[in-house]
Structures are given as C-alpha cells and as structure tokens.
Amino acid sequence: MIPSPYFLYLGSSDDSVGIKTSRGLAEFRRADCVGEFRHDASPLTLGLPRLTMAEAAAAGARTLVLGIAKAGGAIGEEMIADAAEALRNGMNVAAGLHRRLRDIPELAALAREGGLQLFDVREPPADLPIGTGYARPGNRLLTVGTDCSVGKMYASLALTQALRERGVAADFRATGQTGILIAGAGVPVDAVVADFISGAIEALTPARDDEGWDVIEGQGSLFHPSFAGVSTGLLHGAQASALLLCHDPARETMRGLAGRSLPELGQCLEANLRVARLTSPDVRAVGVCLNTSTLDESAGLAICAEVSATLGLPCTDPMRFGLDTIVDELLCPANFTPATTASL
Image (tube, rainbow, N blue to C red):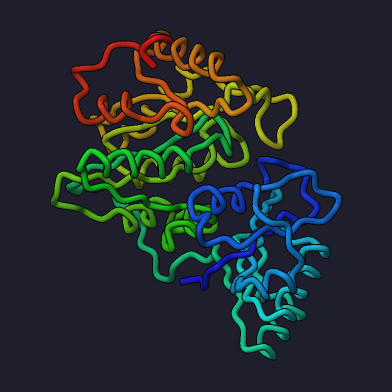
C-alpha cells in the first residue's frame, strides 16, 4: 500500500482532464489528502490547501502523488525536479506514468539516500495468463466509453457504492492508475503486453459464487484509434453480462485527435455489445452515464432525458443525479421505462 496522507501534484498543468488522477483522489479519498502542489502557471485547483513541499511534509504528507497525465505517460523535467524536492523533504513519490520513477537516476539516488520509496503504479503483475474466453461464474459489469476520460472510473466507483447501498455485494476492479491508487489494487491494463490483456482481466475478476457484482473500470474507446486495442482486450476478458456506456456531451472531438468526431451513442453501444459477444453472448446494455459538469442542472437533466428516450435505457449523471435508475435496470430490467426530465 502507498503510504498516506497524500500530497497531490498539479504542477503547471492547464488541462483539467489531464489532472484526473489527482482529481480522482481528491474526490474519492479526500480525507487522505493534505493539500495540492501547483506552480503559478497552473490555473487549476482541487479545492485543497496549496502548499509547498516543505509545508506538506510538515502537515504530515507521506507521499507526493504525481497525479497528472500527458499523452504517452511522459515525465517532464519540471516534474522530475518537483519529485526530487519532495524526496528531499522526506516524502515518498508515486506515479502512474509509463516512464518509471525508478529509472530516473536522480530520483532513485535520492530515494535510497533518504530511505524512501518510489511507487510505479503502472507496473503490471508478473506471470499474467493468456485469456481463454471460457465461461466463468459471476456477475460482471464493464464501463465503456465514446472516448478516453469521459467518466468510466467515476461511474464504476459510483455504481459500486450504489449497489452496496442496496445491500448488494459489489467490488470495484481498477484497471488504470487513478483507480488503482484509489482502490489500492488492480491491473494497469494499458501497460500489459497486448497478448495478455484479456487474460489480465480474467485474473482480475475470477469466478465468484455469490450474487454480487464485479464492476470493472473501462479504458479507452473502441472508436479511439490510439487506444481501441486496450478497450477490445477489456471487453473480451471481462466476459461482462452488462455494459454501461459513458460519454461527455460537451466533448467535440476525440481526446488528443483534433478533427476526429466522437461516435453516436447508439453506434458506440452496439459496437461494444458486438465485440463483447465473442466471450459473453448474452451481454446487455444497462444504461448511459453522462458527465454533465459543464452544464447547469436543468440542461443536464434535459440531456439525460433525451438520451434515455432515444436509446430506451436509463441515463444519468452519476455524480449529480445518482444511479437509482441504472441499478434498477441492472437488478430488475423488466421494470425500466424511459426517463423524462421530471422523473430524473
């Protein structure tokens, strides 16, 4: 386990989506976070105290979490310098980026000298199996998306909690750096060699003999040319009986791919169901989760109602309007009727 309390890193980032790891920890493990570190160049905040490295250490922070992500998981020189300063102040450093902290000589030396640890979260387990696609008992739901960073982790965590509140056993299965930091365990699927992706997810969600659910955090999108391979492996390894589609209605183009439009929701849902049927012939869609944070409440309710009526599935923003309709559909599918603005 990575020692807490955490000190969350924003650096000089001006990308509100790119700070999703720090934001996720601030949202779901706020009690374990002492503050945030950001340079004057960053206009972003998590609503936590802005501290220097020395102030954070004095406040009890044990680990600096480099909770920002750039395409390709790069670690820039500024981030290395800031991580070095954290180590000099007696903090461990954790990151979920593709470049390993332990492979940066300056950081490795400072950690050794200070008796501190470097945590590379994007480190897949050794000896992962190759997927087989053989049927295994248990209820599994996978979140899928129209794009990267549209709320799959948030929806998965919120759904896990909503099921538990109904008295249903549910476990969040993390597949990305943020989810792993929040849950304390998981498989960083985008760091797994392609041949082993489906097997990694089979291992992450073994057979279960209760009536509970594994809620599996999705990654990427079948429609994103850069990351569709990871999404495909997840769909096959999950053998999900249910899919939950996630979408950001304010997103105009694919993340990192200017000019490439997002798919229509119905088109995206059908494509995911089709791919999932290779290993789960009876898979079904149980709803849509929207990230309406850029809309006012009435507009958010209206677009949820519109999507619900169009697709004939429950649609909600899990962080604003809850997940009752989707939990109902998951547990009692015959009871669903398309939502209206008034009923959401």
